[in-house]
Length: 146
Image (cartoon, rainbow, N blue to C red; front, side, top):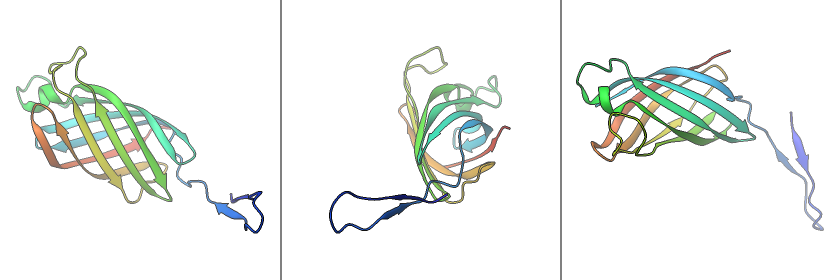
């Protein structure tokens, strides 16, 4: 669908705006991994135009193995981003505090998905854990639950 807006300013021509073709609202589940280990990921997303926001939870694949992942991967937070065409730019933030194994640590994850679709998202990510430091080698793959 093509939307055309007209300006009330004299001499201005119409401006065409293309709404995003990718529909991201809903539940997404998947897996990820970085230097701290593997994780299970869940998003609950809402999309308004080209803006995406929602909640994110991560969980260690094995919460009893004693690895960094068994503590640092058990978090809840927020996800926000923008979609332009099929390019999705995301930021996930997990605040410190709460009833988690490492309540003193916060985590920020940033990702750019060059080819997002309505059904699948896969890309690399980078970020920082305030207890473990920066990481640049993360990957995740998410599927839209229908």
